[in-house]
Amino acid sequence: MAYKPSSAHLPSALLRKARPLRLLLNQAERLEHLQRLLESQLQPAAREHCHVASWKEGTLLLVVTDGHWATRLRYQQKRLQRQLQAMEAFANLSRILFKVQPPLVPVTRTGQGIELSSRAASNIRDSAESISDPKLRAALERLANHAQDKEDRS
Image 1: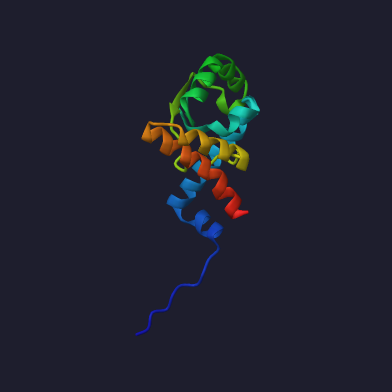
Image 2: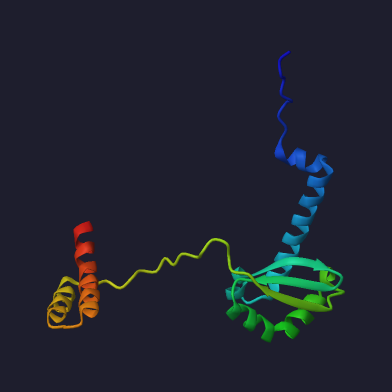
């Protein structure tokens, strides 16, 4: 007796047919809609740091990436609540809660580091030779080596 796999279905069809998956999809779409409404009322800089976590019984729970943004949004909480209450989806909004939750994947900074010229590296090496503290001398030599490493890679 051979195993015969069932025919393949499109993922969207499966999401629409299976009740638990359909409920999950509906909830995700609802949160996405609420997120768009929230973003329309936030400053552009705050949009990437604030996300709708839940909306039930008049309470909007927002997840914020760090304490800095949570504090900024708390100062604007009354204005934000008034603006959201004017929208049909948030008509019965009674309070906004903020929860700080850093992103799971650390944000990588794409800015360029400080470039150290070969002349600056030479000056740092010269300074390191006259330093008697071995830890400071080693730190200066490591710093001077960064310029050398960059030139070797070029």
